[in-house]
Length: 250
Image (cartoon, rainbow, N blue to C red; front, side, top):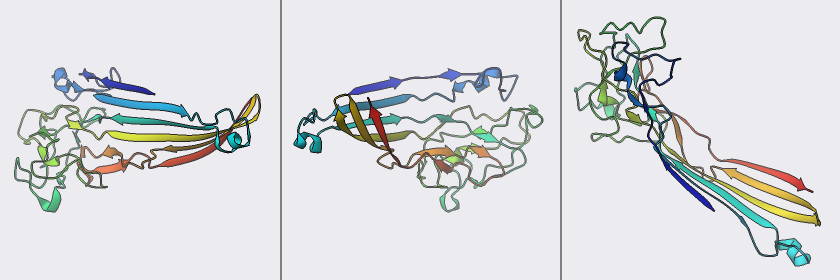
């Protein structure tokens, strides 16, 4: 049996090192925040147990009921940070339930996105716009968030809004301010070892990945643009997968 726990923190102002671009070249530290791989908590438990009963399989009874082995891995990880981005010339809906308005600005949409600060990120560049951040997107403010249903809110989308077209200041949203979904997964293996001769063994393997069929959210829409899924769950990790195999050892 083995158990491991890791706590980590990864902060940077150069998310993609030399291959990426910051939002505002005049304010490099404005991009300082959690790195894309900043997974704070990682827990893993694993074990292998060869059942001791009739393990030697020396007689008929031993050959009939001996030779079993089980193993498992249980992993629990906290989520990765998500960064909200924006595309110009759109005024997307917050997608709050029943047309609810944002607690911060009383609107049902983000407002009109423009390159209000003139930082030239709409041309041939990998840099992009960001909105203003009005509050903590990881708090629901009376709206249920962290839903796992498809096209349901994961974070509070009303915490973001377009800067005023007349403002000379770029969007204030930092990188990685949305806490992404974590996951937990149990993988289980059940094996039967058949001792054919002294040095020849056949093993039948039955394995299940995500054996509990836990719903693990994989993707959340963080782009304020022409789409209609801002803030919503849009994809999942694998459901339960099972496989069977045989192996000779000699």
